[in-house]
Structure formats: structure tokens, C-alpha cells
Image: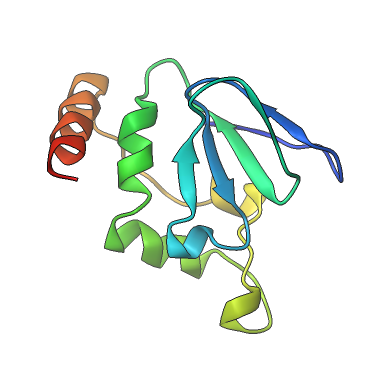
Amino acid sequence: MAADAADGQNLRAQRGDVVYNMMRMWQGAVGLAPEECMVSPAYVVLSPKKDTSPQFFDQWFRTKRMLYLLGAYSHGITSDRLRLYADDFARIPVRLPTLPEQQKIAAFLEAVD
């Protein structure tokens, strides 16, 4: 995933981009842009690579394991001040399933959600 950042300016998100609140990502504050839109600078916009499923990431970022990692890579004086910056997010180690597996997992999780 590639991060799109502009200090103090609104960000443009394209349909299917993963958007997260850097102050609440450790709580699962993440979603997919349903269409092209502008996003507050309090958010981070990630454009999924072509060989990945945005729907998979949308579900995966809410799992207990990922929430733990997202919290571990967040920085702040107290838990209510934690922030996950794009550079720190990029440091989180991941092992992704193949695209077809991502799509199957996402479809299953969306069906039971």
C-alpha cells in the first residue's frame, strides 16, 4: 500500500482507497472510500497495490491481531493520545495471502459481518 500525505491539507481519496484515522486506528477506525472524496488531514489515505484486495484490508485491520500491532506501532503519551503515522504503519510486518485467497476471505467476512 502506498500512503498519500500532505501536511495540513485535505487529502484526495479514490474509490477503494483505505482511509484510517491516525488517532484511532488502534481502535479499528478504518474504512474504504466508497467513491472519490476529500479527507481531513487527521486521516491517512492508503492506495492498495493492484495485487491486493481493499476489502480484505478493510476486514483484516479490524482483527484482534492487527489491532494489537496497530497499537504497538502507535505513539503517544497516553493511550488516548496514540497516533499511527504512515511511516510507522509501513513498518508493520505483514505476510499476505494471494489475491484469490484475500478475495475469498474478504467475501466470507463480509457475509458474516
